[in-house]
Image (cartoon, rainbow, N blue to C red):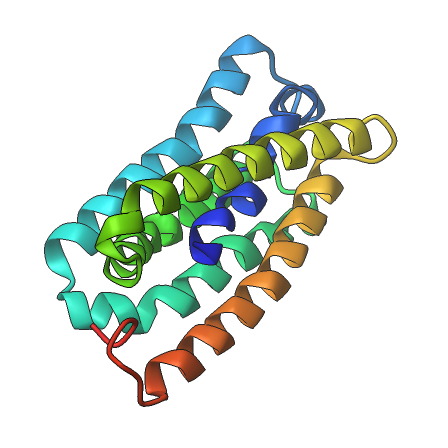
Amino acid sequence: MFFGWLAAFYNAPEGVVTPLARDLHGGAAVVGVILAAEALGETMGAIVIGRFVAPPTRQRVMGPLAVTGCVILALFFLQPDLPGSLLILFASGLASGYQIAANAAFVTAAPREQRSQAFGLAQGGMSLGQGTLMILAGAAADHFSPAWVIGVCGTTGAVVALAIAVGWTRERRRPSSGHLRH
């Protein structure tokens, strides 16, 4: 579930897309292109991970991809131009393909009789996290450059993702009744 909630960090650029487009000397069309770049990356990442990566490998790369999806946003500290920004957002979206593995691990870990309740909690937390972080990012962009805000969100997300990935790796290696080992 925590891997799913990381989406709040790598989707934070959506909360500052208009001021980012303005800083990149663009208008409404640039807003659309910026939004499309990450969405295209997310789509491609889901296809690649879901179609071409074996389930055991998906589980192994989930942590590193979660960290990558966030940490790559730190490149916004360099104040990239529009093509650079689009490339960074696409790459972040591509790494978010790990969500396929996170969803599978979540289904496996949730007891069948509580799965609906677990999915409700997971979805509610994801929506709340994304909304909250987008509001905070938008408010921060009133005082700091949108690129800096994205860099902070990405860096913070990478630290959180690393902690989750380390915990996940330890849990997978620990002998258990099988609830996370599948």
